[in-house]
Length: 405
Image 1: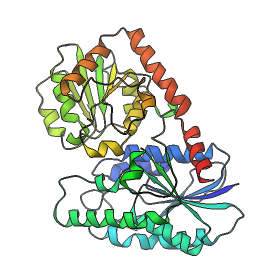
Image 2 (image 1 turned 90 degrees about the vertical axis):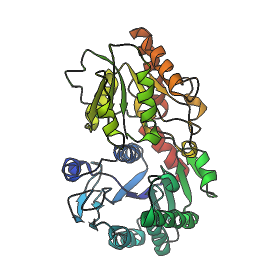
Image 3 (image 1 turned 60 degrees about the vertical axis):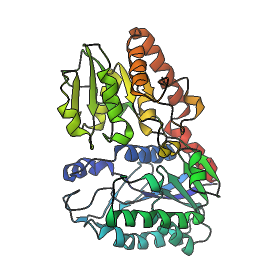
């Protein structure tokens, strides 16, 4: 049966990405953006039917997060196969207001799509557990009870904000978590990153686990990297520099290494930036925010890649870091802790520290660095082949399509 899919997304339209970046005062949500585009591109490479995107630009509020008070509305095309007429919806972006009124801008597009009959099975697919999107899903089903509703949950709402949020922000976040929970009943099919998510969210509708999608598009890689790193052996971490994701543990682990010719290269932004800059170690190279194409190039030139997220908090049960799949796609060995949310099928492709300590992380990093180049290449290529074969966008999207059908 052919599908007519409406994708409710929070992504960066490709033709506007550079313009959006130039207006942002805070960081890009690169991982979420990449996952959505991989799902969309994977759908299009399968013979599934047609898709239309209704998009909510995922930028922080004016004035501290973005230069514009209002987000412009425009159309864009996600595919060359057919005229998709994707829509980036015009929205208010003013702090304290945007969260309460922007769903109104979406309603006319949802109503129009829901009422259109074209002989195909209509599916509305919401990216992540978002109360506004789930409310719009409920609205679509009000206009057409035959619509199948799907929700891709990449983050548990409870853990989707900083732990130190207080006051009105904390109250609002608690309200949103409860609001999402009250709307799960309208969803017919869930796509989750880990099996444990279903129990945590008390999901009773059918679900499928799709932990992520491998980065197989070599066209996005910029093969040129900084001249200061071309001939160096280096450990690489690229991502959010928040302590809950293990950046402090990585710095501690690197301090325990004695190889004076090995560098630690860090790309990203977050609360640990100043601490990294203050480190009195010439071996640490902090690059800050780096374009995604250059990050992928840095990954492919590294000696070893590290994800220092420790298995010491509840949220790790509900997390399969997209960084792990991106790293495994590079052909370079990955050192990472075994999180509860990582399926056992990955065990022979990730180099796990012996325990949850910085000492064990340091020892595993040095173990991989001490291998010959041929041995490291063999490790990396084995992992790359596994994710390219089994976790590519075409196969993962095909699983979602068949599950929805």
